[in-house]
Length: 370
Ligand code: GTP
Ligand code: MG
Image 1 (tube, rainbow, N blue to C red):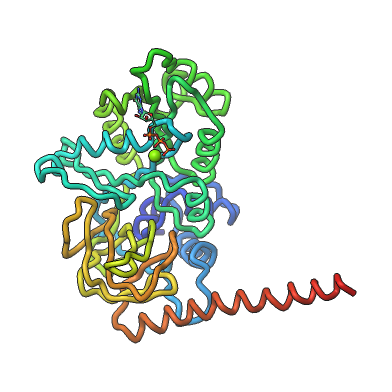
Image 2: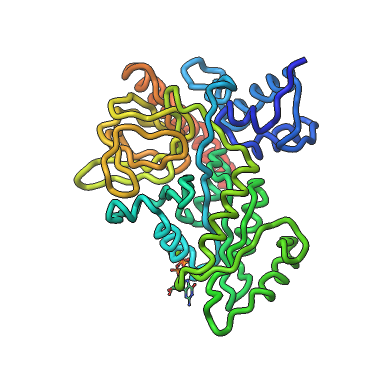
């Protein structure tokens, strides 16, 4: 019978392999990402996954993205999505800035940049890496709870002169719970009080065993300030990404995830969207969370207007009916009527949820008063 590896199926569903592994585990099938499953199990998983993760109701209005499986031959490699996490002031932003400085293309273009919370860097070898500005632990947890896992790899930043701190430990736990591979960047190695070995020992106490301690978690000493160790860090990211075999179908209607959204005074509602699969184009009609829209313009992290965006590219999207939430899914649909139908359905669902909860609360309030 036909078999498929978990990662290959994940690529075909535009989901993360780690999430499929978790789903299989819950179904009583402990397998690893590179193991093969048979066709019946794959079908069962697709069904389970749709219900568990995207919480698709039995309504035929809703879009069931998990059930929309791409054919293997349509899959092409996509850049890894890397989130930088760590304790306050340990140098997350500085490291991201330093890594963006390694972008050969941005360098050539004159490096006009703007903050959209997500960046794509083209490294020397020509490969691309998407970096997400740390969304804060709350946002990360929220997105994870909503099944909006977009991160393929986490870079854990630890300041070598400060060691493990509460938020470092939180980040380790979040990363574990999300099943995401981690690379430790021991930062501020230039400082006089820096002690990388102490950091490695502290990590071990929290069951993170880096290579130097004969474990399998990659670690690298860096200085975001002096820009040292960056090439090695990039190499490790690419190595980790290769192991994950990340792929997506670029040639279909786009699906993406909202990283952040805001109401811009001049431009109206603007969402930073990470494309998961397909290619998003100017003029596309879409539904995003409980909002709908038509792509009026797209702006990349270099402030340039672009006409299309493929898998793993973060873009600012203009032309939304309202402001969606972080983690909301975006799906391109065939026409405006369909977009409005799905958006209205989702808004109704959200309203129903609020009103069904209210009387229960009132009731308990009254009974408490009696
Ligand atoms: P939050 O976003 O507030 O959590 O901080 P962060 O983790 O983004 O840290 P940020 O990059 O803002 O850096 C905090 C301070 O550490 C700044 O003053 C940086 O200049 C300094 N810093 C960052 N990296 C290095 C480094 O490699 N060496 C030295 N000496 N200082 C650094
Ligand atoms: Mg910062």
